[in-house]
Length: 557
Image (cartoon, rainbow, N blue to C red; front, side):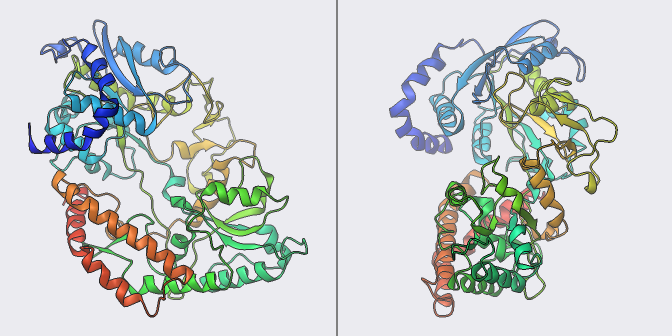
């Protein structure tokens, strides 16, 4: 047993004691004769030829059950796959979310027989590397070279070519078939929303700078914008949601803040923003707003549901401005959201005006395990899933039943940005259905930029995609060049083991002190130097060294 395997087993030991026995027995009862067959490729047609298999086979598949899928056995996407493949899918079901991940890791750690294919288990980079180097997951380099057909044709439409590099583990190999969905609305997802009715009532314009923003919030606080005769206004608020943190939104008027690890790149070197003078200026600004009652004092403890509850408790809106990925401060059918419009990222006193860029990194759609009897057929299945037909099916369902092609004169959500109409959704997203496996949770697929962006909007002005589409143009052109952003890091096993604790300690310290400085519990003037010195004790220098390695690996340097 290798040292890495030994560490992994120790990490899982406690969990194995609790629940492992059942799953080890279940794995042991699976057909143990499922070792790879050397002549399995002989039964597989050439890339691009369907059906995939010349004679029928059965593929044992582990999948995390999505609550919106009625029945995987009879699902129409299952039938599509079985027809295109000339195979029968035999399912092993795992719970959705973390429990499913924990259970498959128990089976892996037991050393027992695995399902042949694992669908949409969220293995991280280090787990892929570890299981790949141990031979538990197959190295797919040669499969991409010799068996891929749909993948390269659909992948060439992806707008970020660096995604292929991101799919590689630190050892240079690829161990999975991905799910990739590029959606321009998700790229610019830290959004601000302001009450246009209040602006109109007070004769104010939409703020564009930090100074104008403060003036508007003061007017909201003092001039009864909802005309109810009470001083019950919350000028501005946010939530703990990653894309709803108002402090992160405002920091971008002073220094680029990705809202995650708060990293930047200068002259090829990775650095952090939270010990820089411009970050300090951002804290001063936000602290000033907080001191004057212009930002709700619970922004560091309130989740999105709590923010929504504030608005749902009144017949008229009580918050003037909020940050959220979409208009999520209101229930989906609450017409109060019609009072709100998106605003552009604010410009700071030095002319800085950034918005975070959220690249949609590939996620694990399918891995082929050591116990696959027909790995070539399984890879070709994953390759087919990446093609346009299967990718659209996985997101929208059956053509001309669950979605349709555009009619003459129809426009897309992002028509003004140059994305022509592609399809109109009939089956509502989020419905319980038996048409597809739910994109992002149902295996590989590639939905390149312009496909989902080419969706034709519904007639309901409250639909979230319509709100998102209104906001996106305000964010275009307000991100730093790609060479100044850290979009992805790829670590070795040793690096991940070392950086994990350092990263957690640093991020916890930064987030805690952001709240302390902004709320005035710690002085930005008196305590700043001591705050910065603490990073030496937290080993920031080593953290940046490892981040540099991970960054260079991700950009292929």
